[in-house]
Length: 313
Image (cartoon, rainbow, N blue to C red; front, side, top):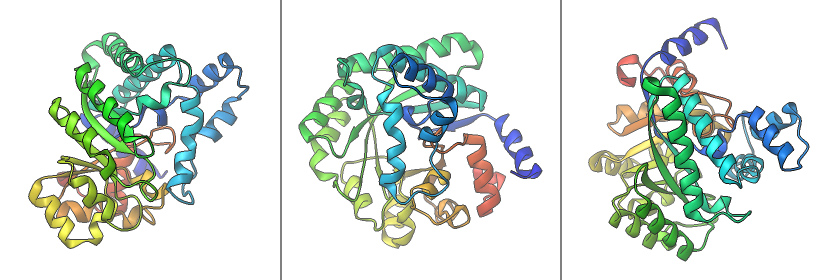
């Protein structure tokens, strides 16, 4: 990173920011991963953990990028590990100048050692509360977004949505994620209806793979935000629909390059979408997997795409 880029990152770090798209399991501190691996009987050095947790600058495809979640998910199967991971992420967000953040994760991925969905929700909520109490006045406000997986049975995702809605604050939203190319969204419509009926905000991952069909699908759920949605720029009708409905795209530039959704940062559509009137945000997606921070993402967007400070505000 150049000295100018480093200076910009530091300037941005000191500004209050909101981060709306980041995954708990993609933001594990490598040092903590080594500690939990040792307790789980998995021999990992810090160097090995970093190699297993941090994806390369460019992966073959979305599936390859998602493979970097295997180790952290394996190590997040107890209430204590979930609680600590959530607390540490809140601490890291505060250090990056985040004043409001949302943390999303798939509770059904953490049931391998006897936890139930409600246990998982309680553990993450407790970790957030612990960190906010310790940070005091510098603590960011945190909302939790419960994520269903496209590959999971629709009935299981419906139950997940019902439990998420019943849990109450700090759970604020419901999401759908996973391999777009293999798993369409419509089978999970009932889960979104249940989440909406329970008062949760709706978002869904779409638009990381070629074409815009998956974005059009999730718009039918009544969502207000799309996680990623980079391919929208290729469909003028979709761009106009997003603009008219006020639907926000929560974009993650470094991650979008890693997954192959865009070729490089210079060609990332965030600035073009913004200038065409689409509401956009910038987030990390996965701080550890993408080896980034929100301040670094904003600096990268400014330097690579020409987005101005006024446009970022």
